[in-house]
Length: 73
Picture 1 (cartoon, rainbow, N blue to C red):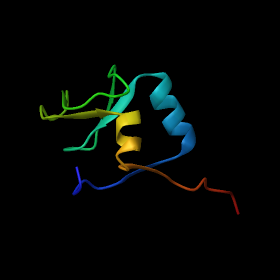
Picture 2 (cartoon, rainbow, N blue to C red):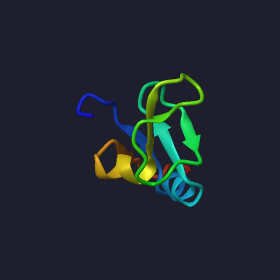
Picture 3 (tube, rainbow, N blue to C red):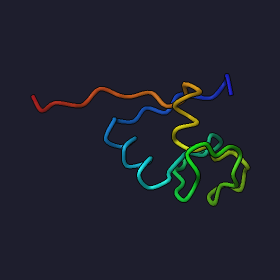
C-alpha cells in the first residue's frame, strides 16, 4: 500500500466512518459502508475491485490523513 494516494478527511468525517462501519476503496476512491474497521481487500460495489479497506486499517497504514478544519474568514 505504499503507492496509494492519501485520503484527506476531517476528524468529524472519520468519526462518522468509524461509527457507521465505513471505509474507502483504494482503487476508485469511493466510500464504502458496512465494512469491518480492520477490513482488507473487500469487494468494491462501485468498481468491483477487491480494494475496500476499513477506516481504522487505512488510518493505521497512514493512508487517511486528517485535514485542517476550514474556518470562515
